[in-house]
Length: 213
Image 1 (cartoon, rainbow, N blue to C red):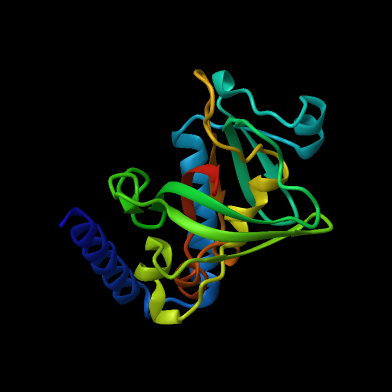
Image 2: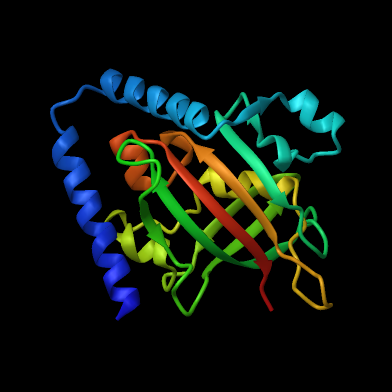
């Protein structure tokens, strides 16, 4: 019942959002997205660092300072909450990755969750490939991301979800004290899920990554 309720609430939010935005031009929507991201960064007291600063810090972000690194080429902001255990996904590997996540639509609210599988029984499953440092992925059709946004019949994992894989360890909890990799990301519409891309709104995600069996 919780699973059905969560999906229905997400669908209602999607329908309302589309109705409110059908008279806006693309330029209006892009400007609204930019302002939403700027407002979120200001309201959450985020300190934005460059990729050079991120690399100099050993590919980490200082959570005590609420740092996020901005990747200029994609417009994605990332905060690494935990680097994780295990190993990075190697070049040439094809792996199953299990994710727990919450999603916020910044054009609607900075604090109201649009979609989450945190209270569901199953994490989202995605099949990920690393080809010479470029990650691609598809969701399993049982995943909540696919089920909610399945009107587009796409299983493609958003670019924003894949970007952290270059910097985190994707393993399993084996020993006491082990923690799964966890990130927060601010994702512009063109690097997000298909509904965000088509309707031009930014999303924020908090995601944990675990290597599948």
